[in-house]
Length: 563
DNA sequence: CGGCAT
DNA sequence: CGTAT
DNA sequence: GCCG
Image (cartoon, rainbow, N blue to C red; front, side, top):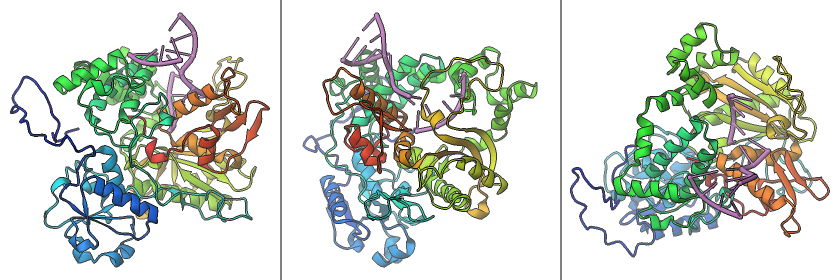
């Protein structure tokens, strides 16, 4: 939250603060020059030619001077993560005198328009400049944790075209491949002009962070109060603003953005005037908001339940515990409270990957030939995750049946899984079961991925002896049949707004009217279906999903359309 | 004014 | 109603 | 709350 006040014009009226000096002659700088006066060396190893060229352009366009040897650089960028391999490209003694960062630092900073904190992108853990020498623009305002470097995402199967004969992507039990080496292409960032998040490129970091955080408070309040439609509008507005690549300094900039109407425009105007949004501040300070926010952090407590609890005088987790101790609530809630403190702690990337490796190991033991992809925020490049989403399948269609149980049993016996919040299966409807709800009626086609895919929502514990933090971690295990695997991966990679708009777009394209011939595809994460003849369409890669929906491919790291 | 993801 | 993205 |  606490950000330094960099070069914001900041017409903050009223109180203190010296009057803004008219010091801002950089009008010709179309591209933020956060690397001005900085020498940069890019280690070519492990980079494709095009990726290298891309990074060089990126660095120079932001003011860097490129130097051919690391010894002369203020900043060294590299895609090499293995310490030993890195050592071959730059002596450790030299390394300790400058920042040695992941290339992702440049990608993120360029998208943001300012230098990201270096600490979050150390190529080698703990390797930082000993003496704070010349790194002018790169002041490490490192606020906190985030140890691991966002690395090229690991994915299991290959896009299948590497080898002609075996149709199965993953070779044997091995898994975890890389998707693409170059990854993002940040270059000329387009202004968001589409109404659909799935047609925009939205990086993880935004130059308008504070503004959007304020708007997100109002959105959250609407959610908590059950005003879903309003909340949706804020989600859309925030989403489109997050894709806006420059600092917003005037409402004229956002005037014509889709999803930004009179109300949101006025809120932005207030923010630009006063560096705050009064409605947001009021909400944030209100006891009710704080209570509902805290209560809904407990697994299985949603906004409706939270409001009901609040009405009965329960205003925090401690009081909820007492309320449960008096015999209220169900088993899931009791479990959730048991480990609530652990679940509040975010998971570093490295541990996410350890957990996935552990799951893959179990898959190998239970049914050889499986592969997985880590989805969710982790796949979108977040430095930490709230939970771990693992999608898996078997290379042969059909072999995956019953796999979720076997996996959960195996990992439970192992002591890795400590709690089970729920296991769902295709065809099994969570309604009409258990308690006496005579929910005879159920929609004819309830096919959401919540009942077409098998999955387990569990809690795991990876002990420190195995590299874990010794904390309970939420893990979603989702099993997809081979032919819908990539649809499931797309569906579970998010972000939420990205998914909503993906489906909305699909629907628009599909539904009759539209003389748009050639189209007519239904999308859900259980697959793609050509409506014309209700024929399923099999895809073998994520890109094909986008193609078939008539969309430009958006890499996972540019799907961060939520706050 | 109806729709807003599944 | 909750969960998931 | 915004849009078609």
